[in-house]
Length: 397
Length: 177
Image 1 (tube, rainbow over the protein chains, first blue to last red):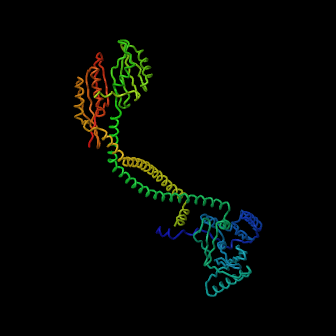
Image 2: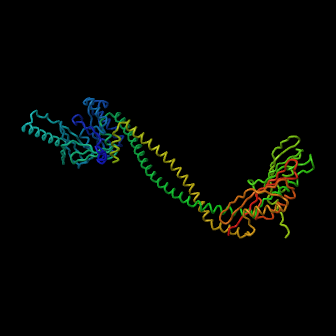
Image 3: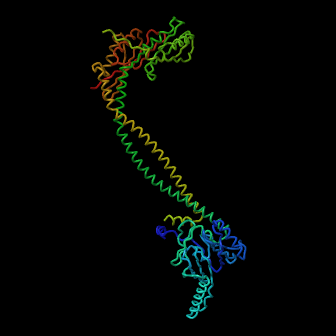
């Protein structure tokens, strides 16, 4: 089997079970004018209970009613007339109805009678003025002759024709008669739950609500089947959505490939410009440094002199001695780090206070002193205010 | 075609439907997750590239202004007073000698781009008088901005506080015309 051909061929017709018309009795029952579908359904059930010789639980029954129709057509069969094998075969069916019910969607002209021929008999479906048939009659055919001779065949044809005439007379008021020799066949479903049957030239579309009412199966079982159908449709929708998402992802992948190429071009441009930009940046940085060299000067001795202004220098035992002084390039032009010692640790706090108070000092951070052999060593970092530092005056010319 | 596929799908057994949906869903989730990661990565990369390209464009746009600034800086200097590495070493050595100091120099480092070159060298003076050091320092400062003090460290040896050692890094620059 060619899968593509199968796909092109369209969906297969849904499985339906058309039951012999002779097993069903049919009635038309009046429906109150202006009834809603729910009210009509209640009236139909009540009517079947009234006219049927058996309780509803022992019947397979269905009905056909359209809004604004003054009557409904009901049909029912005793359950025991069907074997377990037959009812088991209905499980996968989209619809189980007597064969004539498949034609109820046809909308023939008023006064039309459709004669449906089957192996077991003839069924006449007659429409009055409305869209719902006014009567459905079935007549069984006499048993087929054991020997097929011209005479027996002629007799059978004559009996068939007589039955047909009787049916037309019985329906009454037939202005058009349509003879259908082939049983109705289901066509691919046009929409979820709806069905279309075709018999000869006659099409019978059945919308979903009509199909639901026609089905003769046990109503609880039907409810279960419909729930399963809804679940399956939900699964299909998820499947369809997922496949659509996969297609979208495939498209998005293509877009991503395009975006990557675009990005690669930009990256190339970035790399190509890098050397030029680095040269410009270097030139800028160097110019700034030259400008800094010109305008901003490191003045370490001037900073030391400021530190010395407040440094205790009272001689051994009463002084602070700087052991090393160094600039801190990472901290800028105005910071000095000093290592110092004193034989009098009390001077450290005094000196610190003096430095912090100094108008030229922005901040002074002292580490805790380490004391050994009557000597305290400590380190402090001082940051000066730029305006406190003046470069040395140029020598006289 | 979709209706055919739908009919085929709905005609499957429930477990087959569940398996099909499960596999496809897993596929979608895996692909979507991978796609999302790759898209996020590309998004971050392109944003970074956009930033870099904008920055580069800014530099390129500013090149004339940077060139003008460099030219202006160059014009404000006297080329005859600028020093290359060799002259820097010689000049600083001479200034030290004039102050009675013996300065030893380290290696000269050179960095430059286009119009300017900066030369940096470190000098050390061991055990010098404070006044001589001050004189040397002031002599260096008088040569500013053609000679600039970049770093300075003074160390006093224990017991010889009056004779500190000096380590100074100085820079000079050259202007290419």
